[in-house]
Image 1 (cartoon, helix red, strand yellow):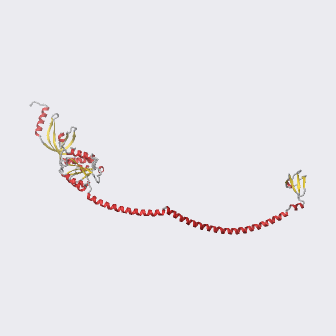
Image 2 (image 1 turned 90 degrees about the vertical axis):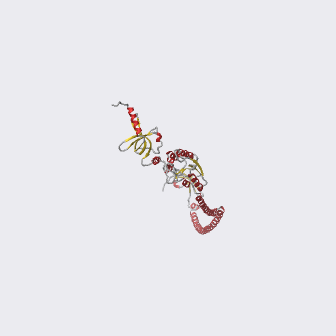
Image 3 (image 1 turned 60 degrees about the vertical axis):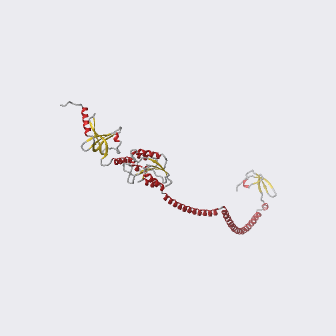
Length: 417
């Protein structure tokens, strides 16, 4: 019987055996139970239909991954078997990892694209409008790249009035993303009309700096409109989706953002012709309006009004005289008729009055007091006032007066008849 050994010694022997036997392994499986530790290490389980094995990728190797490890992702890993002696657990220490089927860059591209789309980076309503006639643009590219010369050539041909500020930057390599972000922030502070981010064609690896999340963040956060012109027409970068305008090539970007001076000359000629035609039409219209105003002024001027009033006054005066004459003639005829009528009436009245006087005279003669005296009539007075005989009372004293005699009398008795 062998002498016993300690658990630690056994685990150390197993560790030595496994790590020396499985120095390099390549394993394909499905990822599960993914944990990104605050230390930067990545812990996960690799499994297939029948079994599973624990895996770890330490921070140095984890930072080199272009994609994010997610639950259910099928991958191929390169690494070595390692044993954690205190617990007697073994695991795969991953050195590298590739998605199974698709390349790492392709997966990283799709993952970042989906992430940014969910964050709203690609929404049309967030895109800034580009100026129609930019005066100053910031050009972010490599000063040694062929793309720069193509862009400068197109800009000079199309719009010589443009001022270009070149901001040199790295356009490929691990440090390119930091350089591009720095250049974008610098350009955004220059108060230019437009920023063009560009580089010429290349492989996916060469263009990868334009697929980095930090570059996308810098484009989205910029206040200045940005045009992404990276690679060739078939190349679509994350920067293309986030930017306010995507150009298929660097030279095409200049054609898209700059007006064509030849077209502008034609436009200005047409504008001049239209302007002259409009001015001529306006002048003709205003001339007609002035003529109408002049005629209206003449018709409504004070002199014209005075003349019109004079004519109207003369006409009214003439009509007044005619009317007055007519009325006078009419009244004269009425007066003549009235005079004739009055004369006839007066004659009738005079004749009637003469007859009335004759009748009164006759009545007077008939009732003459002298005749009454002769017939023994006397007037009764009381208190010097005439009084009817019917008003006398017994014992009243009264006078009887005739033309020649006055008698004072006293009533003895009164008998009503």
